[in-house]
Image 1 (tube, helix red, strand yellow):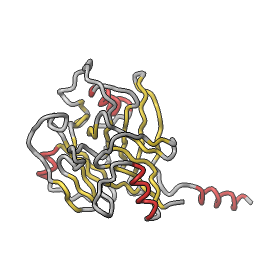
Image 2 (cartoon, helix red, strand yellow):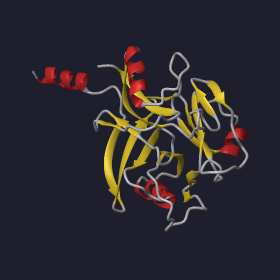
Image 3 (tube, one colour):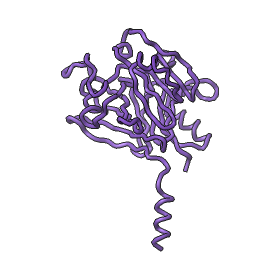
Image 4 (cartoon, one colour):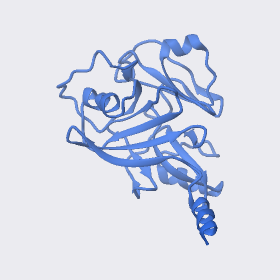
Length: 243
C-alpha cells in the first residue's frame, strides 16, 4: 500500500516546476511566476498559424490546446508598436522576426541601458543590448525591451526613489546561474524604482528587465487569473502537455 501511495504521488506531481505566488513588498501587492530550465518549456508567442497576432491569452490558449498543450502561466513578452509588432529584437524558435535596435530613442524602451531577455534550452540570459550584440549569442527565443531594471546588482541609475510616474508594471529577472527566471507583475501602480527594488531586495536578483507598463497582464492557471484588455503584442508563456 505504501509503495502504491508513493507511485501515485509521483504520478500526480506536475512535470513542470513553474509556479505563481502573490505577495506584498513595501505594502504593495505583486504576483511572481517562476520558471526553471531545463524542466519548464518556456516560449515566446506572437502570431498564430495564419499569421495573425494572438493579442489575447484566450486565443493563445485555444491554439495551444489544439496542439495538446496547456498554459501554466503567461504574461507580456516585451514592448510593441501600434500594430502589435515587436519593438526591437524578437526571436521565436531561432527565427528572427524583428532586428536588434542599438540606438537610443523615445519612451521607456529608449531609456538606456535597455537589454535582451534570451531563452535557450538550459539557460536564461539578460544582457545589455550592446553587450548582447557583441556577444553574438544565438537564442531559441529572445525579446528586446527596456529599460533594464537591475544591472549587475544595481538599480538603473536614472530611476528616482520617489518618482511620481506610477503604472502597473511587468518585468523579468534571472538567477545568477541563469537556471531560473522570475516574471513579476505589480498588482497596483508603482514607480520604476519600487518595481526594480522588488527584484533586487526581495528576490536578490542581480539582473532584471522591464517588459511593459500600463497594459501588463497575467494568465495563471494556479491562481485562476486571466487578465483582459486591449490586444497586446509578444507573450511569454510556460506550457506543458495537456492533462
